[in-house]
Length: 115
Image 1 (tube, helix red, strand yellow):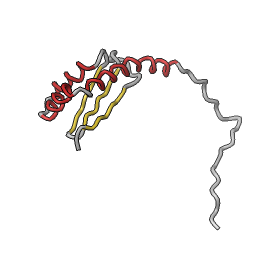
Image 2 (cartoon, helix red, strand yellow):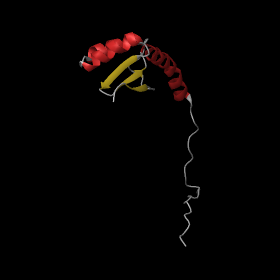
Image 3 (cartoon, rainbow, N blue to C red):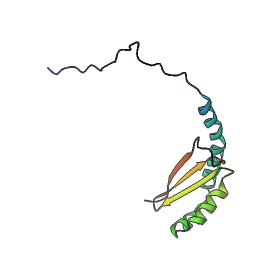
Image 4 (cartoon, rainbow, N blue to C red):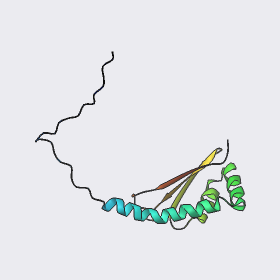
């Protein structure tokens, strides 16, 4: 009969330090900063459902025109900073806060458009 695994649970001793109290300030700030990025991402997704936008976007990507792809994606968004990378199989769009010094969060969308 095989031995039964019993997980090791360390015993707390008087010498172990206590964890600090949680501080939700940074998380709250990140969530607040994320809301406008989410709105911009929604605008981009809306444009990506329009064939009149998608065909020129994919054509520019297929021709390797990164600046045109960037321009088109940025034109679909609001104030957030946008970065786009594409391959023959899809596009990755990263939305970041307007303030370049802000490193609280980002939103990455990966969408397929090919094989």
